[in-house]
Length: 473
Image 1 (tube, rainbow, N blue to C red):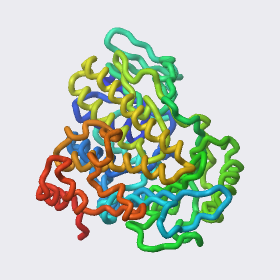
Image 2 (cartoon, rainbow, N blue to C red; image 1 turned 90 degrees about the horizontal axis):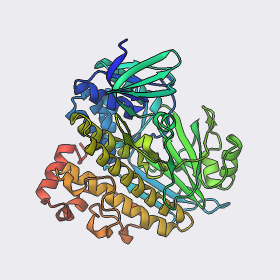
Image 3 (tube, rainbow, N blue to C red; image 1 turned 180 degrees about the horizontal axis):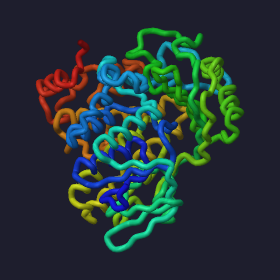
């Protein structure tokens, strides 16, 4: 193996592998360095419409055709059924009172369903990361990226126009280093960077694993059915309760990802998980027969913000510069937007001014997301107010997706742009309508009626719908 490279990427999750593939497509010699090995478990498993669109744009721009099928449930299943994933038709929220079974209400004041797609064929997905990350690594190798795993790095040395990365029985040099190793990762530790706190963010812990034999919520006796805008389990499911929330993501290989993020102490693994379930009788029924297939993982501190994201000859992906909370599935779009920006800066030969602007935008997006999530946490015991805040997120995210699909990216140049504006200015998806009683389908006519907010015509919207397959076949 060569000992000198143009680009070294540390961390081979999907973000690191994607960054390595882009660098190779731009003509650079690239090494991708992994501490562990594949296939392996990883947190961060749920895509969104905006994330899928960003991945599609990146794959097309840098001729990574092998990745395109993974941007929609339908093409994924047709092309790579061997890579496990789950359909994600929307975001499902249920609000629980501690110690009481969950019950449907006529006005649906304790639930919120927000559809993300009109049918399965163009639906988003939950990524079974053991399969997906392994696929990304193999694709990186296929186009000429050098990959090494089981490689622990413990030092970084700057010399002239090169950076030397070293560990036990390993040493390479590179002109530039990209850190994709996650929160409190390689560069944060090696450079001894400061950790900063997000303003007014609760001190949360997380506990999570994978299960088999978990019930679908629609099969739990308390669930009343009805005609929701999508199957409620084919979604990112959130069980909200005072002080925290539980996520439930279902894959098509029989595995269910579930965990809790909370201000409570959940440091005792299965014991803590069972104590949380005892507070939520209906969720306890959902997991009554479920068995964990992996050890529980405990995060004593979920939120993280590095003091720096760039420096001379190095940069962090947003996933390494900060992490907030899996609530609302913000990790994928934050990471992919960062990948797209770093790719452009790579084309500019790492111009220092561009790197500083990348750092500014990265932290601005992380801070904006943290502010929103903190507001949601503050209303976990007031679900009507929780829904009001959530509407701002869904309005901003759907506005950004529509703007990009309609070739108006200037309308939404960054993640959650406009989230602090009056919701009426960015609401193009028919949200915040009391008449819908907290069930929001994905309807084309809502975007058509609000097309003026994006500066486009109704005919342009209809043409976009035909282009992306919005109408069911």
